[in-house]
Image (cartoon, rainbow, N blue to C red; front, side, top):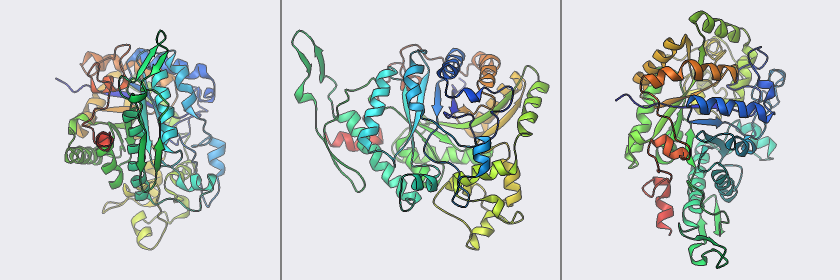
Length: 463
């Protein structure tokens, strides 16, 4: 049988996504991002057309060039501003029955107990349709400034902290309450069994806790664990923790190599390599005809500039491309002691190696792409064919659609492409009441993470 594909939508609670400029286009309604009706309409489009989840990126970072917020970021809305999508989720859950919701939260901001309670609450309010996108931080120079930190935490240290963070959060979710601890019996006046509620004790290098967790177990207990990052540390972390990994899409060959490596590492961690869902970003220009799709693409591309690219790249890596020699490569600049930091290593390493492009070529490659993944253009049949070809080449399990003119292009994709993929046996619709985990694993009733998952091994041992 053909592999079942999974689709999410990559969003931010801002005017546009991907570090590119599109909100001012007549097809975009991005300026309505603070209106709940805008998101309700989008959620209904996604649910009705068969998407698995709506994914929200987020954080406190923003682009910095020479230590300051660049003018183009403000004027064009490039990864600035941004609101908090957490508060949208309960609203959207009331207007949907099957669609999942994934929220990004950094492991370096709150204490694990704060995050654990937030996600337990969201899992209850969505009836088991919540996921956590685990990030160790983004735009770390800006985050360090806004939180008053003296310096950025080194890249690999952030992953060491994240491992502790996830372990402690999982102990709150999985060991603080027994399955039968909640009673809720009005006749006896017993809310919960005292002997079923346990103290969580944890003493790590970075995090400590000794106390009780007040949030009763939610339908999934642990939210579905997502992770994005294809640096060596990021891959190792994903292999041992994530149920769904958002892989950076550069070229099909490089993406295939990253997919194979994460599956290998997952196997070495004692997991089923095929049980980890691997997805990449996908920008789609689709129209009733190929000519319509090409016109949408050309109009989008005409809106992009070098300054927009440089602002986005600086926010991700700390490197201002426009300040570098356009005829040299990043490798040459780094070897000569040029800029390199503890940010965006995946987005630096992709431009290193023997075939490294020049700075000028990087700007050209990223214009109109930003942090976006693959790009495909065409009529509905051409789009469906290209999706299947990418799956065959990369062994991905699906895509996060990165909209350009939202929500109208999402509606087009749902109306024109999803029915074709369903006809080809590529989609399996979720049933109302299924958890997000059950939907992604294609196993009704599979709501819990399971004691065999590496994340829970220390928690189970601590019981």
